[in-house]
Image (tube, rainbow, N blue to C red; front, side, top):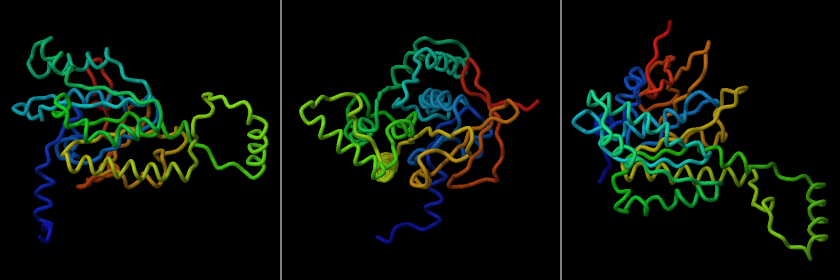
Length: 288
């Protein structure tokens, strides 16, 4: 009736199931891994390994409960067309070897069959899919999903965002429309473009839908975001800054990949956590 106390809230936070990342120091800082019931963002420049970490999380999600996993399925929403079944199979095979001490095609196939993949081509399809997720997750084939990955959240909005036209541009557009009134043909250029204000409203709606889904369903939602090589700030602007409960930032320093925990419910002093991309997947790295 009166909500819950701070003590009860803290106890619930500590008891949240988590998905290990295979980076030991990162798991320690996060209290055991990526928490269920919250939205986590992985931001970084191109080539730093964000997608590889997503593949690793999808595989680790299937780790049985008796081996300190959550034994659940995962759903990966690919917005950039970067999903690689071959790479996913390599990571799944390496996880089988790690868990059982020997390769097992049956376990690998179980991991792959429990990793569901959906593809969206633009922000419209992404918004429709996110709004339909509560219904999809009630279907028998998806009711075991406890991890949803969107790789990436920024891409659909960046390629369709433009600044509002100037008065001169508006006049030119009106003149062109008048000239083409008798030639109404739908082309790829007719796709609705986003202004900055419209994009901000859509992003706020999307973040609210994802946060609600994570909380009500007890699902871990992981989003990748882009960082320009010339700027340390993740894409999508200030409207997105408060959307995630956890933010991980990937970066390069002296030819080494590092992770930092920029935001978390139980923050630790920020440290650079080295990691590497191996044939077996994402792993902890040692500084030489």
